[in-house]
Amino acid sequence: MRRPNLRSLPPLELPAGYRLRTAGPEDAERLGAVLSAAFGETWDVERVHRRLLVDASVVAVFVIEREEGHLVATASSRLLPEQYPGSPPRAGSDWATW
Image (tube, rainbow, N blue to C red; front, side, top):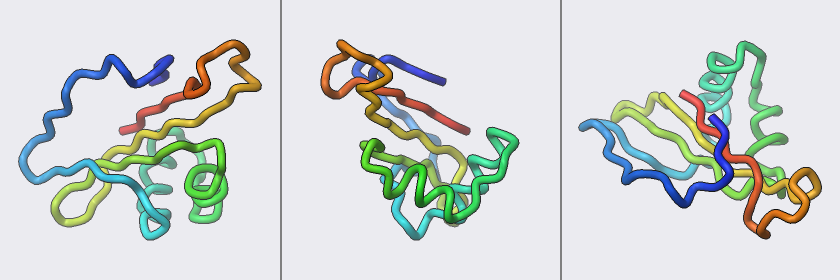
């Protein structure tokens, strides 16, 4: 899913046993599994780090996690002003994957 911004999202209501949080380096392997399943291509730990966790254009990476630690969804926001000239400074490409 791609959105021009995240301002008009409805309030998040997660089922019991799920939580939304910011992803970190410790999530790279599990995040790669979610992305590989969603996009049908390999997202190994190195790619997750390079393309999401340490890329300066990525503003934030979020995950939805079940109580036992299983990641079930991810969303990220990336600023790409060179691809979206004239956009507000915080505009970019926002993706959600589940």
